[in-house]
Length: 294
Image (cartoon, helix red, strand yellow):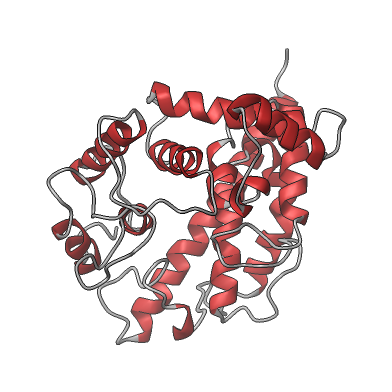
C-alpha cells in the first residue's frame, strides 16, 4: 500500500551498490550519510518492503557478508559494548526480520535463545544464570548495558521464534513487566502501563513495543488489554486519529503528505488495524489448537 511513496523512493535512492546505506548503527557523519542502514531497513519494513524486494535482498546479502567476515561495517567500534558480539547480534536480528533462511543468523539466534532460556531454568529470571550462560558461550563477561540487560530490540526480536513454548511464556511476561520497557523503542515503562494520552508520540512508541511482542505467538492472548485500549480510542466512524504529533518519520507518515487530515487518519488506521490483526491471528491459532481433535 505504501511501497510507491516518496519516502520509499528517497531511501532506495540512497542505497549504495554494496547494499548498505553507509554506517549501520551509528550516524557518525550526517552530512555525508543522512540515514543509517538500520534506519533505512526499519523504515522500509514499515512501508511494506520484504525480502522479495531487490533493495532488501541486497541489504540482507550485505549484512550476511558482514556477519561472516567477508565485509566490514564502517561504524566506529563502540568501547562500551563487546563490539564484535554486539554487531553479530544486530546483523543477525535484522537479517531474520526479513528471512529465516540464513543459517548463520539462525545459529546466532539459537545461541541467544539458549543464553536467555538458561536464565529462566528455575521458572523465573535469574540474572546470575544469565551472566553465567553468557560467559560460558562467549568466554568473557558481558560488557555494555545492551548485553548485560537482554530486554532490548535486538534480543527480543531475535529469539521470538526460537524458544520452547514454556520458556516463551516466561520470557514474554518478564519483558512485558520490565520497568524500563524495551530498549531502543523509546517507551521507557512497563508495557502493562498504558500511555496517558492516546494522541501522542509516546503512544506510538508504546505501539511499536507491542508490535514487536506480537512475534511471541503463543502469548498474544495476553495483549487483549491493548486491543481493548485501541478499540476504545476509535472515532465514531471506526477509524483512528492520533494527531500530527506522531509524525516521527519512522512509523509515520506513511502517505506522501499529511497536509490533509484524511491521509493522516488513513495511515494511523492502517497501522492499528494491522496490529489488531496480528493480535487476533495468533489468538485464532491458539483456539484452533485447543479445539482441534488429537
